[in-house]
Image (cartoon, rainbow, N blue to C red; front, side):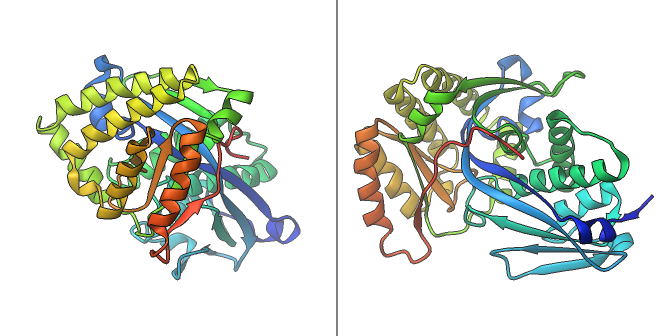
Amino acid sequence: MAESAREILKVQTITSSAPCRIDSGGTWDIKALALPFERANPVTCNIALNLRTWVTLLPHRHGRVRVVSQGFALTEEFPFGDMKLTSPFNIFFAAVSYFGFHGLEIHIKSDSPPRSGLGGSSTALVALIKSLSKLDLLISEKRRSARDILHLAYHIEDGVSHGKCGMQDQAAALYGGVNLWSWRYGSKESPFLRSPLLRGSGIEALSSRLLVVHSGRSHFSHRTNRRWVADFLAGKTTKHWVKANDICREFAKALEAMDWKGAAYYLKRETAIRRRITPDAFTPLTNKLIRQAEAMGCGARFAGAGAGGAVWAIGGKEDIEGLKKKWKASLARVRTAEVLDCGVDPWGAR
């Protein structure tokens, strides 16, 4: 049964936030790859960034739901019973439909650039479900755990995207920190195993050995993800993905040991495999940035599915400081490009 949130939100607005991520081994979290190859122990290693997305629930007209997102010219509003789940904000309307609330406005604000490949839409969905769960707790006293929220966020996005969605973006947003995720979609108990790799001083050390920039060109993941999945299922690239999966595990071991040069080496190897699988995921600028990083002894790769968006690097502290100067010079003529001031977020959704 639908319920109006207007009166509650007039008294108390609700805000939640969650971090975005960078990763090694992304794509293996997509069920089409991970489930039939579970025997290969499919994994993703990701690092949550303290570029957070904030979602605030505000009162709105009774019977209506409105979504406003900073950085997007589009604002969408529908009657509760006629929300379009094919709209650009479809995952947010799907989440509201699941909870059954109306009379609210969803305001989204992100510290990361839109369409940067840092998992922004999934992060916003996690923050929204966190806010809706807080509202639901006020109304029904129903409490949801982090696992409950992750389960719901993943299945909403995967369902709306027709099965082309993985779980690692939502997982990083929920838990924060630095984690190795093993994907177990065949398990009734849990679709993932989480292995935290760094804590406390280790997270601080990693933050000073990371560099993240936005190339100034928007990233659209759906086309690349479709090609990756189609070619994998057709057997065209399967052996390359299996090799990349092995390398990701070695990258995670290096992070856990705080072996930054080792982590750079394995990230460089993964990027070489991705270049072979989909060379068009590299734009001339992102390819230049990655080559510059590798020449300085760092490892680098595009964020998400590439073809624009963010690029990130890992290496020794002095190497990263030198690379920052090179990358700033390379991005100087691109008006929308920028070095992102960020480090590791240890907290996850709040």
